[in-house]
Length: 254
Image 1 (cartoon, rainbow, N blue to C red):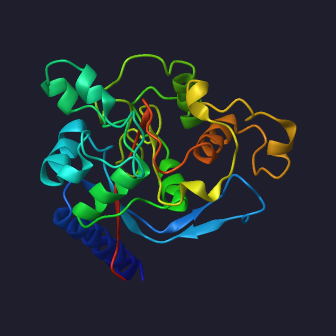
Image 2: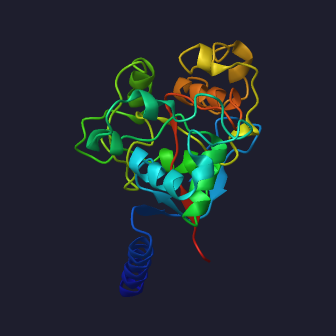
């Protein structure tokens, strides 16, 4: 029996390695469950296995997309698909440098992020997929006491400088910077509804901590998640912001 179990684990790991070899730059996220923020959704949500980009998409990667698909360039994108802040840091950054290449692309709309992922034969992760993958614990040896502490420290210094994609921390799934670098678009971000425009408050909605927000919460003290969900509810698909980027996902063939 022990030999059978060991063999099963070996072939499962081998399958994950094969998938990642076919999709460089992506990590296989195993199927599992996670507890959503709001109890009204479900006590636990099951998420099937999928692939997710190891790091947020960089300026260099997105530039290759706009070069190939000129309709998504800053000068040609339609207002319906991106507001007037779209990729504004490309103009204000001065000379293009290797460092800018490796920073996560920001000021990018949901429509543009979705188009980029489709261009590569991928898609944006769902909210459930992203939350499940982001809940992975930090790998040992990174001097991070908890993910929640890392997130709250990040929220307190959001006006600081940008960092390179893949420079903050890596979690147990091999994913870099699910928290602590940029907010990230998800496919169904507008499942959460709010009336606040977060761009007027350093990208954190002011109504987040109202008492009613925590009544049906799975964790009333999980302020980090409250902020993330409220942020998603405050934006629309054509919005672009200084700390908003994305990464792509891909379904696993069953």
